[in-house]
Length: 292
Image (cartoon, rainbow, N blue to C red; front, side, top):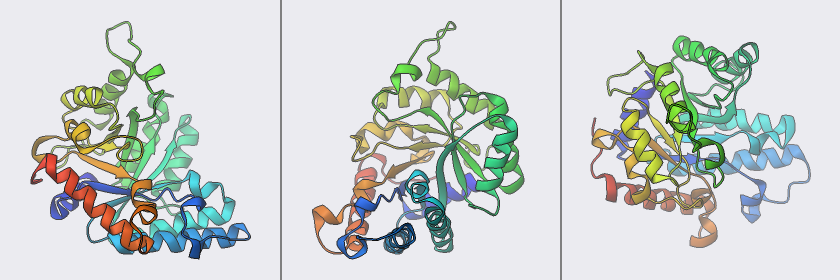
């Protein structure tokens, strides 16, 4: 089962780090910059991504690829998106497509087919579930049929997330707690050998108290944790996202790894590897040894 594979990779590498390949053209080093058209720009992004993957594939279990950075380049960007998926999976990495898809059931079915089928074959997909259950069911069916997983937006890391997500409902729950309970319900019955379901939650590192509440409320839900590094989250803030033995969560870092060469010098790949190793050490300092 996919969530077991992710957990086992984290344990084997002692590293719950996900490298975010949110590759903006402005992040590219000089030798890859200056593309004159969309095709050349997409080729440069794909070359850069391959270099990052080669640098970290033996020390991190997963990558998260944010599709917006590829869609802005049109069809050529989607070619680079698919090429990045294929290259990362070919190196043994688990791929999270960060597309935050959702719509009515018929349209959601098409999204599920795209990201869990032949077009953009990913292991996990981020989903915005605020249309309700009918917009999620097609993804759940595809996950079961093809052994894939979801990460549903629950408590996000952005500064204004509380405008909606922290509002209190008539039954006393916050909106994010309500969404968390729905996620737990959608995943019920799909627990793997480590106790986590194939329906995970996006829980930001920048809100440690809310994360602590959700971890206690959702003991069988695997967390994707954005917000580390550039957004202000650190290892101490996010430790409450993890379950027993340091399992149950994976922490994303995008700019802190992709742009590390600007602070560290050297090649972008060497700097990315060094930043990923530093992040692993930081997480280990609060989690200790990770075990199932």
